[in-house]
Length: 470
Image (tube, rainbow, N blue to C red):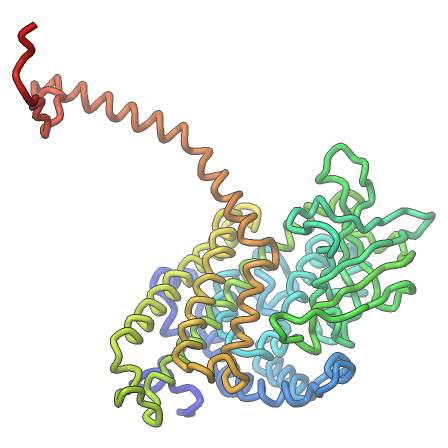
């Protein structure tokens, strides 16, 4: 057995053997076997290659956003040979994928989340996953052949452009980019930022949300989604945005402007005014994909924490860190929180498989809020265990924390999901109040029926002092 797979005191316990019992009935034998191949590929090939990838990118900004590390293409070839390709497209909604359910992919994505390169190596990286789902679900045959096919083959990459720097983009109705019809073309004007993937030289297609009908009385019918080739005239990528100091090159997150950018009318997706429908269809699966990978990141952080706790070279106050009770408590809490978060993610995946993303809005919102918090908490504990090393480049923890922190913002900030969850939950308030009152009334009726009275059993009615003589 490879030492790169050792994960317990007994050696190696395979990923398929560690599938939570509640999820096993939903996992096919083929998926279980693929899961083991994913684990082996990530642990033996991708994680060791992360260091090579980082070094091949380069040093200057121009180098870092113009490079394409050769190690990635080698990994992509290996992944395809192993049949680890496009696992994310759920079989009950798309014919283009590898034939797995959301639940089955959720188990696999956890392992992909442990490596910087694993998701792209298997062609399961954001934002391409969500963008491929958009084109596969809503695109015309022409759009599919022009853009979906090369994306599925891993030959190009894509970007999703929605948020804007000058407005509160957590409310997508605020976006201001205009998409104006002019003959057989659309003209785009405006700016976008946090355009993930736009820095990659292989990014050839942008999926852009803008307004085609800003005066429509229905604010959810003002927006449209259109496909914009990266070669269209009038596009300027002004700068890349750092994430707590990390530039995420060559993928990156860009600030870009559109100045009279013209694209063919045939590039409109689904039709004018359908933008909200499309982005909601895109963001639902995207949110749960982030959550799936974040479970893997939390597991990786816990692994690093356990390694530090048992490092014989470093013994504060004469003891291993594992001999200090507070550290064992943190390990235990991390284990509980990760396992609980995983079950929530798998439950959401099952719900999507049974219906679709729209039918699992509550479950998706729950994991969108829960999992990043768990991930950050576990990573923070691991950082604390390493001390100064934890916040340096000597461990992957600092960059993992930066990436994990963005998950509380991307695809809708926590506050939006919490508010919507609270509102929906509160809708049941009147029903619960009525039921509780009815139960109390029936309880009182039963007390009288059985002759036990309704007085509080702890009632004393004790009074102080004498009665007034008046």
